[in-house]
Image (cartoon, rainbow, N blue to C red):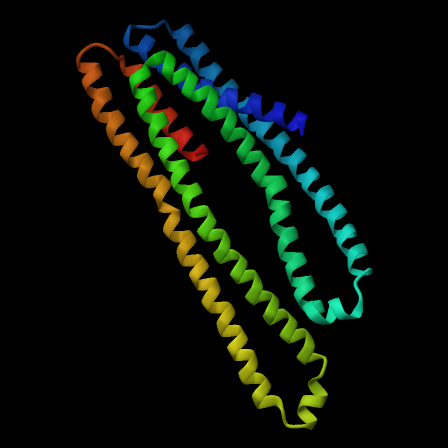
Length: 272
């Protein structure tokens, strides 16, 4: 993970310095920069973009390999633990329940160690470096951006507990449906012999409806939270446009620095 942290730091640094270089290029261009200097600016932006792409790719490959190793080890440990369960425990939970929960949990563990670690590490370094560079340009605008991004993160964390409980209920209903299918499909001939197919179908429909209901609730809640960060970023953009425009009129901010803040806001909103 230390190597992954290094990759994330280098990639985030390249991403954070790109707006600063772009803003400086715009100011020099307005002042009448020479063609060779403009070429160096272009090469610098291309170099930073290439560095970002290379180290993001290396970080993704590294985190993916770590995720595969972790999930494989946990799968072996889970199987060894299942072999130690007694008959009472197996009857209490059911084979379908255990397999459903294990498979679902391993999928999200893999996502956490692959995409989750990659995006989180990159976002943390980008937020730190980007906010520092913005503060050097305009502490006022940097403070506005930091406050709005903090509000965005706080809103997401505030709704995280509710969404987590909704997801647990979805897992519980999925485990019930999987256990029901595993138990009754094995007894298909017996159910047909005793004409128990219609009651079994109705029972499965009730279990399936419970899963669909909880899954729909989870989707509605998660989709209701998704637009909130974008809304906060739009509000921050409005404030930056208004205050930054007045600072340009007053001569306290250059066009390049103004563009630099707009690009920073886009990058940091994606990170947050």
